Amino acid sequence: MNNYKEAIEKTKPQMEKVINYLTEELKRIRTDRAAPSLVEDLVVDCFDQRLPLKQLAAISCPEQRQILIQPWDKNYMKDIVVAIQKAESGLSPNIEGSMIRIILPPLTQEYRETLLKLVSQKKEEARVSLKRIREDAWREIQDAFQKGEIREDDKFKGKEDLQKVIDEYNQKVDDLIKKREEEIES
Image (cartoon, rainbow, N blue to C red):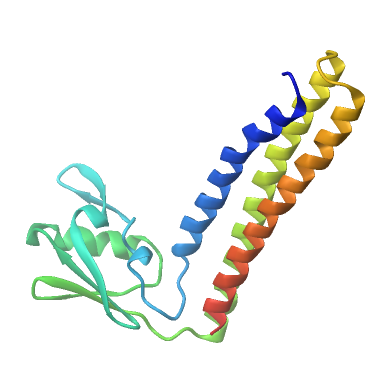
């Protein structure tokens, strides 16, 4: 390693993965508004294969608290219903002709609190992941100093710059979490 900046630059794609993962996880947490993301990645067992629901059906939200699933093939209907019921998402699918309709019940205050706890848990997981990335980069910078590849001034400058990057990504986490909490509470 020629300088500490290499170690810091290597962390950015890893941190972006953490942010992207958090974004996807938050999409799956229900708010008072229906969204295809609540069901589209459910894994459906059909014809000896495990496929995400979005590959088996069109998913739409014709109303604020309604999800409509239109399977490409009617033979998928029972398997899709079973997958939704197994998901423990609290969603109740109803078969109506060639479609499956899910009406989201209004969120109770108790359920909102449960969702907020889940959001808080996702926030903590993201922060732990970012911390682990920071520790790995800091270790790499310290190793470079020990091997004489960088000067002591660069080591401390690296620690400072690394912390700035971490702070930036922690702020991204906070912004995502705050937005989702507001959606749940409204």
